[in-house]
Length: 121
Length: 339
Image (cartoon, rainbow over all chains, first blue to last red; front, side, top):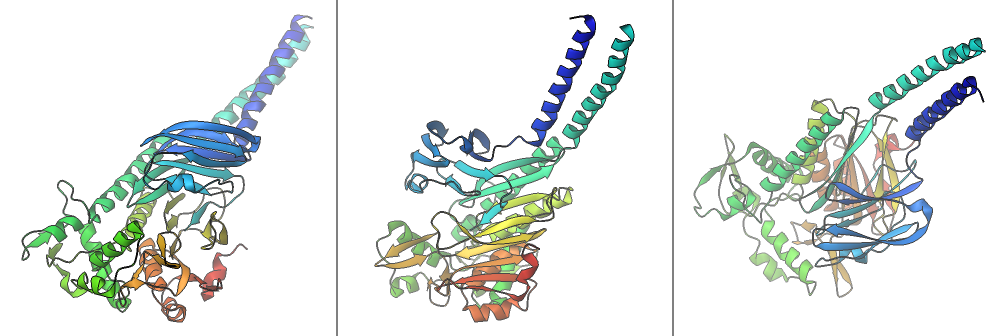
């Protein structure tokens, strides 16, 4: 390997890196993700396209909130609130479905590509 | 050999530089989404702005939160706040003959409510705070329904007792004013107008049953799904495509309780003091979120045929979901379907 080859390899590597960066910008979201907010802060972004089974623990206003991901569905398994509205709601999986835990100020939203912007109810 | 190296450098270097410039340009001009979750008026409010300038977007979201905070406090009839004359302070003022100077925004909302009392022939009645509280109590307890006698006992004060004077003054006649059908629409309209006034035209606000959108940055229209009242998982029965519009739904399918096999929801008919039962939900499409909020409540309290007659006189469209799951639309709804 001479000097010439070294420069060539370097240049090609940099070009590769550049194109990866550019393409990453184009396509940064997974096909289906769940976003978990506490008040205004995104505390979790979960890729639901991975189809795994897993529990997540986050802090809500009234203490720990346990969020369960099962395949491409997500639910609130356990939380502290007077009426347990959001844990009774069960799994969500469709685009723009959401779980709102008002007392805990936890919100879970599902986003998929090319779907409705919002739902009025 | 030396020549070959030179050639490689002279070919790759410009590509590299151009690539970096493109990357920088994309980053700088990319329209990004900035969102905020707010919790006011007993509602989860989602605000999304599409903008290039992060600093401007963050400040705008801050201001939008301020707007909801102010309207929330002004329209709160359960709690007083320092330095604010709100619905609570108006109702609980101890001097019955006093006139109070109130915030112009609160004055405007009450005036709007009085105006719509006339226009709706009494279906929109902001003087029903006490009746609504009776129903709220039963809905929380879930153990029965109030008798007509109990409701009559709390049917104190009428819209005529709410007297607005000049210069943002209100005469205090101990009416328990409820702006439940007005404040959210008002705050949402003001938030949208504010964003437009500072040049942010791509935005989406969803305040419970109250959606207001601008014009999206990357496509022609926003798509707004209307929830199926029969669905427990948030299915959508229709999608509205539009820009610079407000879509507001009133329905009895979310805030309700069941007693002896019958459902009792939260929208109370002033003529009967009971929840109305003409339909499962009604959705109004209009430019003005204030009008949308008020009108969706009025339409929910009117038989569908009467509502259609009213809609034909106004710059709005409406979609009714009746008790037999039949969907009825006003004439111009085709303008909001996907082309």
